[in-house]
Image (cartoon, rainbow, N blue to C red; front, side, top):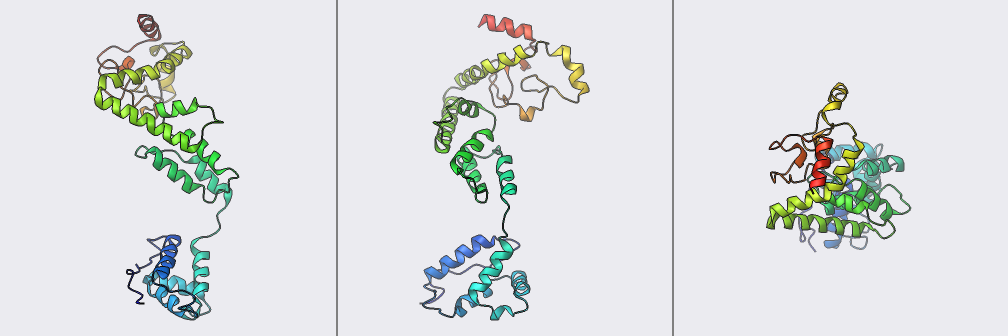
Length: 274
């Protein structure tokens, strides 16, 4: 059988490609073309195919690693071992766990993509309970929003990673559907979901916005254009909510430019009206 019957093997350049991935593809290519220990008992054919698929820089690197032997004299399996040792060094568990626990969901990342990326980060963490670690980091590292708030309220003994992903995606789809069919209803729902949290924040802040502005400015903090508190707008958990006053996304009613800024007293009066 021709070695080229099932496709052409691509070139491996260690500056561009992953050796682990390439090695897996190489071995599968051998299987597809029936090149194995039976058809290539000495491994000479497999070695020749591998070495001819190395880019110039990668071939030179492999030659250096094989010294004092000449690379073309090293058995095929030994070449794999040499390249494995160089490209896939042993990883320390603590460092890998640090990467895992520091990971957060990116703005453009869906919930399923976020879960998949986390699972990839567990490869060298040696967790005794991988699913539990995945569930916890999936929820804790999520972007702020209604999905995260709902998951925080769930019974941890009944919540799995699969259920967390399913629930988060369900809430996202429901919100997107509501916004598409009735933007006004979506705005009301978003502000209503944030209502209790907003009122609690006002109760904690006994001093109205204006009275504490000098202290916050001196501390180098700017007033958030989304909610009115003193922190960066990019980290504000209300940045995706829809204003009940102007129906625009990106700020709450109390800082809407179409009305004056509200103080704690104004919010109390507004609550009474509701």
